[in-house]
Image 1: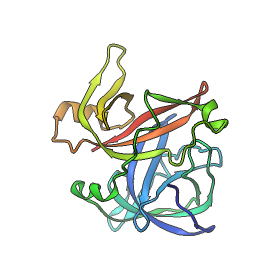
Image 2: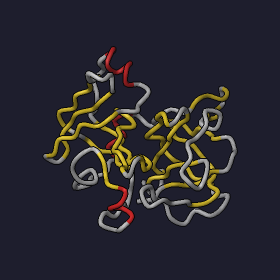
Image 3: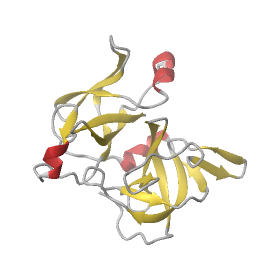
Image 4: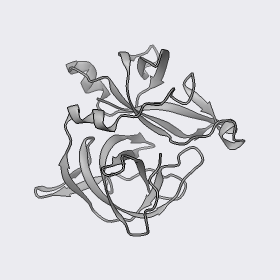
Length: 212
């Protein structure tokens, strides 16, 4: 669920669980450290992406790009929900502050356990969201999956194939670490951050934003 009760100028500490590419900029999302509710920082009321300059944290060593698993403090301007992305919060243009990080094994404390990933298939009809047939209570999930297989298909597209709750999914991946993961083959926790993307040709596609 999205974070409620944040006032203009409120500071909130989140753990970053997604930082992926979006039209040359970044889609960033995380969970509030206190409530475990999702917050998606956006640059405008229409869910605009975060610029590379804004997507940086300051710590005692300097200013660096934000990375998943960091705990950061951001300032909220206002809650700006969309019907397909209720967690959106317009941020104030102030420097983000890093407050340490979480370890991979701590991710289980932030897992979601939905019955499904917005139903079957790789997208949700935007019309079904508009007419209320499908209500989107949250557009982000952090889930533990089974039989995870990362591939580059014949069209050169990055995909994640996996099972969740006895359903198989084949979804595009926007994690910038995808190639590195394929090359180095580290031991993965099979935890994925999955996002429902913005409307495109009357569809909201399901996207794997981060692979842990």
